[in-house]
Image (cartoon, rainbow, N blue to C red; front, side):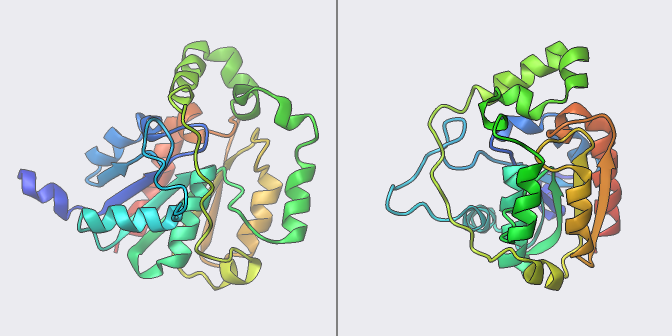
Length: 245
């Protein structure tokens, strides 16, 4: 394959969690590239040294994705987001459906603006939750116990975030109605030890989305892409192969 052919490949754009940045995807980028995709990872505003931008014009995360694709002269992309990046990817898919081949939303609260959903999500955690260190909130007990080097590497990526991210509004209203009307092929993922998005809550969301598939990773916490990268990669590659038309 010639060097120019890489720009003709289907694109997978990666939107990182609030605990991560462009460096979060080391287990995914080479695998996706080897499968024939052009892979784009970036740090959102304020993450890992990325420019915060003007204080009076924070833009939107979905709008920033559109701007990246415009600069790179990309018409359409698969968008994959984890945790806070899942809200980014979902907002992009809703705001720019004609530019979204598919959406993969992993371990994300998805910024769903429904009182019943928000109440159930809050009950999954308690007043003790926000006081926990980031690794205790996100990494599963099994991973912290069995893979200390991996946990340390994950924390080192988190430590790159020193600037503080601006508050960026959604472009879309994310409600049961808008999710139910969504026709973009969508894959919803979570881990069975994820305190943010327990499987029961994700299944409730999936029932509201006729075009969504739902998969649950076993013995894994919030960052599935990191803790169980082989399962994550195989699952998303299968989904992408079926939705790359």
